[in-house]
Length: 261
Image 1 (cartoon, rainbow, N blue to C red):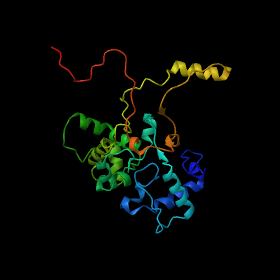
Image 2 (cartoon, rainbow, N blue to C red):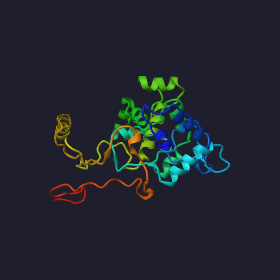
Image 3 (cartoon, helix red, strand yellow):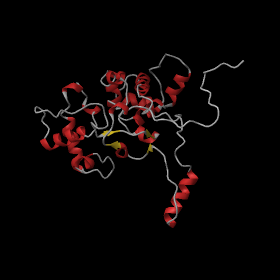
Image 4 (cartoon, rainbow, N blue to C red):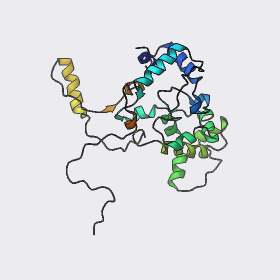
């Protein structure tokens, strides 16, 4: 129950949980390496682990909580996440990142992204790379990045200490490319066909008020706060496996799989 309260990441989270966050963040395991302080958020939402050995300075009650959570495989996991939930995850030490992403956590550009651009989550990365000047630059397929962009976003970045906003935007875009498909906030992902239509959802809402019959919603997509996706007894081998997609009706021709004359 104490672990459950600690992992409540909503506005109702108890104050003591934030103190536990700070204590855990101060006791990173040696295997995790050197992690910048402003890159650490919550060990259950990131790929680094705290130290629970005898040499650790963590209080015994926190060690017991962490060891119990590890024993029963408490982890952030879901079959499928909606785009909004994915965007809330920390970009640094992302739990669904490639090995290359781990090497990008402590570079000079990464420090600038955190310190000057205030980029900490997937949503922050999207905000940085969606600025008009950068999307125009990418669309032009021009490798040259002007240092004197006069748009408001770039001016604000330079005022906060960034020397080359466009270079940092490129670094942010590279971070996003290191996210595995299951966790990537791509709005164009294939619809699994399981979620009820808006009309059926409205009928269910009306039926609940009138004490009528409701239609079961078979959706596997987790929505809402991050706490909704924390599970116990998680199988580590399928943690980043993409969800199975129900086969669509009719003839399915994979893109670029055949040539028609």
